Amino acid sequence: MKVIELAGDRIKTFDQIIGYTDFFFLKNIVFEDASYDKFIRGTRAAGVFKEIINAWESLESRTKETVEALFQSVIARSGLKTKDIMQAVRVALTGRAVSPDLVSIMLLLQPKTVTERLSAVVKKEVG
Image (cartoon, rainbow, N blue to C red):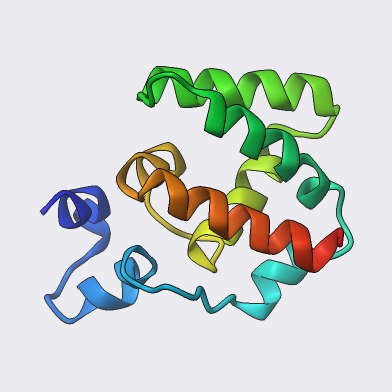
């Protein structure tokens, strides 16, 4: 139910639910090529994922406020634009550039799933 609420008014018909929220249920994410190329491939964002993973795993509690603070801290140290980091994480977690609120997605996914998806992109891009 939380997944449907998160998708909110973006879903107009019942058959759109799966197409817009499938990444919550898939083990392996299928990336939109254009989104991956624009926000991850050849950018420094994937390198910042290691820092995000470490901060994510060390959070004592995962709330909207703690996850937003995590991003603010990582972004400040990285020197990258907020949009660049957030979109790269969105693509790593969902496979696409358009999705529901990123922090809400992270809170609904299992913590292990967030770590695994970000780590998979780090391995693919950074080695």
